[in-house]
Structure formats: C-alpha cells, structure tokens
Length: 477
Image (cartoon, rainbow, N blue to C red; front, side, top):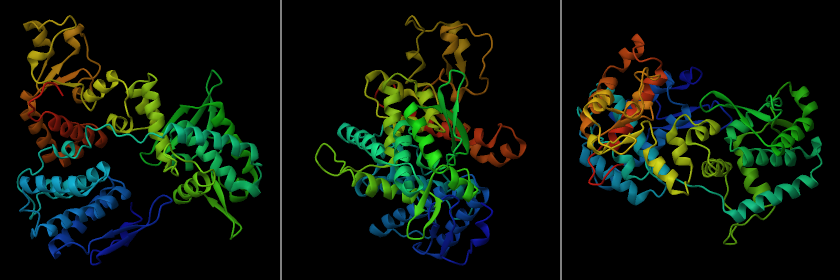
C-alpha cells in the first residue's frame, strides 16, 4: 500500500485513495466524528493499518464508513463521549441491541461491530490514552447479532436457475464468436464460468487465456488466482466451462496480441471504439441489464429475479456439501481462508451436516464438562486414558480411541479436529489470548509463533473459542 501513503493528509477530513483493483477510488471520511480527539485518533488508526498492510484497503474503507453507525447511535441517545475511555460493556450491549433494531442485514451488523472492535482494540493494544483500560467486548456480540453461528443462505430459486440455464443455451446458439459481438460473448462466457464453478467475480476477471490445463486423466483443470488472498488453486471443471473459455479465447486471440495482454475478459467501449479489460462494475451492470432483463428471468413469484454473481458461489458451495463433499474439501475448492467462511456460505439441508457445522470452527468440539467425554464404546474415561488425553486447555480425543505414538500436529491443538475443550478452561483461554495480544509485537519480532499468519489465526481461534465457551444453560454447543 506504499502507493497510497503519500496521498494521506492528516490535516484533511477526507482522503481519496486509489483502489488496487478495478473498483472506484476509496473515500475515507472523518468529518462526521464529534471532536478533534476522535478525528485525530481514527485517522491515526487508519494510517497505521494502511502502513502495516495486514488488512486490505477495501476492508479498512468498510470499517471507516461503518464506524459512522456507532456515532449515529450515540447521537440518537444523547450520549456524549470525549474519547473512547468511557465506553463500557453496558454501552456496547446497548449498541448491539440498537443494531438489531435498526440494521436488517446480519452481514452489515457484523461489519459494524467488527469496525468498532477494530478501532478500540487497536488503541488498547498500543496502550494509547483515551481508551478503556479493561475489556468492553465479552465475545458474545456476533452471536447475539446472529452472524457467527447462523448458516446464511443465498440460494438461487430453482425456477430462476432453470431459466438461467435455458437462457444460456439459447444465447449460445445465436452468438457468432467474432470481435463485433465481443460484449455478448464475454457476458455469456462469464456467466457460464461462474455459474458452473462458483469462483469469485474478481477471480474470473483475473483469468488468463491459458488458464485451462489437463490432468493425467485428461480432465480439465482451471487455474484460479485469487486477488483477495493472493493464492492459487486448480479446480476441476466441466467440458461446458472448457468450451466456453476456449470460445472466448479464440474470439480475442488477435485482440490480445494488439493489446499485448494475456487476460481473458475484455469488452468493447462501443462509443469510443476501443477495448479494455472488463471491470467488476461493468460486469455486475451487464448481469442485471444485459442478461436478467434481456431474457426476462423471473422468480417463482413472477418478479424479475434479483441475482448477483456471488449467488452462484453460494449455490455451488451448498450443492457440493449436500452431495457429500466434506466441508474441508469445499473450503479448498472455493478458496476460503478458513472454515468460518465455508460455514457461512452454505445452507445445510440434512441434519447430519447441520450437527457437524455446529461443531466446526477453529476447534473440534466444545463440551460442557470433561465428564461428558466418553470413548468409542461410550464408556467413561479411566484414569489412564484421562491422563493421556489431558491438555492444559482441554482434551485431545485421539488417544481416547487410538494409541498415539507421535502426534503430527504438535502445538497446533487449536486447529485440530481432535481437540476438545470445556468451560472449565475458559479462563486459561482468556489468559492465552491476553498474552498473545500483549506480546504480539515481540512474538512477530522474535518469530516465536511461526508466521504472522499463524499468529493472527491463533488469535482468531481463541476469540471464537472464548465466545462459544461462555456460560450456557443448555448442553453441548
């Protein structure tokens, strides 16, 4: 993000920073903040995070404008804060209920509370003046807002999906793959690829003309490079997808030479009689106006369908799970960074998977008590098995049912599906998290916990564990 740092002027209340992809510029606005302390502090937090580069500029931008909701809340209830120092747990609890009453979208509520937490914890971590000296988030905020443990669904209506497939087949039979029809060919191929693979729109637009490969069995593999998390993966694709990509590749063969570019998706700016790489905003507009409206695609209620490219991603994830693919395989196929994303993307229709997903996270299983843990025959653990299984912060299920000579995941229990923990270890997990946060800079400097990625994943894992270990009147989580 070095290219945006020179554009940051701490004296101004609005920063316009260029996007690193094909989106519009990002506006960071601070003029709504109630006093100079907040303006100076929020700007400082934004600049430091941009400098560090741990979070993407798009995420920091969302955090910036999402924070506005918190100050709207304060104004609505005539609450005056000179700094963050006077924020209390009770105030956070009130804000959570305000979000439930005023913000419909669970994902939007999640970002808003994450934004507030991001700013407060940044100041606490560096022990700045004007921040609470104690914890004001109890870890249940996301659960209360129904975002952490809710399996969200954005499934496509069966009627809509049938209409989409029918329209794509009809369209293919009428499109002549020549440069004069480039925009139609491009949109047909783009929808076909995402509809059958579930890759992100950014990943599709990032495809190169040589993205198709063959494995040893001569099956098609699509090379997908994700700008979101800078990873590469190969996913199997149908002949239908391969034909579509080859269709477009042949159409733009001479154009790619003229433009000296290997990208797959271009479009024709008809009024300017020029060509450029297809961007997200244009692609989304075309989906709505050049496909849904053109083919009059309606839902089961007879209304024009509301569809995004991301709906196909949810659909694919759900179908893969319901057809027997494991959650970890789906996570790898979709290119998720964690199981949390997989869990949120899919609507699980059968009870077995639903029960699994209640357990899946960064850890294996949460029990209310060690007394609830039994071996494979359903018997209570004897003293020998209990001793073998005992961990400082939980229990390892592997030696309960299998003799373990050497664990392949030493010191990685938080991320192991065999790990079991209970509320009696809650304080230990809290201390662990506090220690990581307090010594984060030292850990990174001295490389005590492996990579920076591992450190932050461990922190997230502990936050999830602590949230789910909070006292409950019911049985196992």
